[in-house]
Length: 100
Image 1 (cartoon, one colour):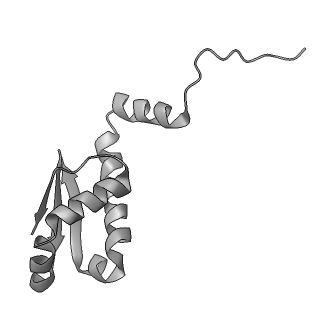
Image 2 (image 1 turned 45 degrees about the horizontal axis):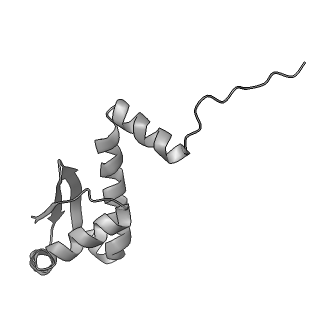
């Protein structure tokens, strides 16, 4: 006899994962990882080498750079950084960028 699996709820995997992240409050940790990976990919190995820390708290992205000239240069492009990272992530997670 063949057991038949009854499908009661057909949802795309992405929706199921989103709901799981939200239910178990892992969304912020998941976003931390996504933002760090997107930053490294977007900026490349040189700038990534000068980056001490990248994290997001609420809707603000904090970037710590250990080279003052680079920090100054990046501060001029905060809006572009925000726009490009949000596009890379596929959602508007970042509302503000702080570079230290």
